[in-house]
Image (cartoon, rainbow, N blue to C red):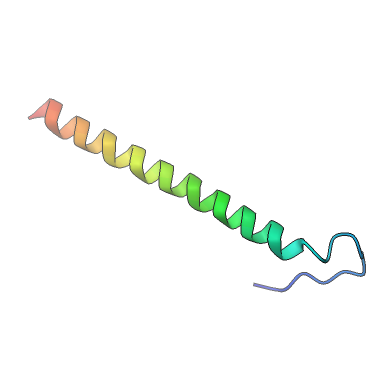
Length: 49
């Protein structure tokens, strides 16, 4: 992944914090989707057997 470089003095200092926050957000979304899929799979398994 390429590093972000710009001459904008406002965005540079906290760019890394924004990237980490965004990655954490994406991890949370992926975890929620995975948990929902597992719950639905188990629900389907127990209801259909």
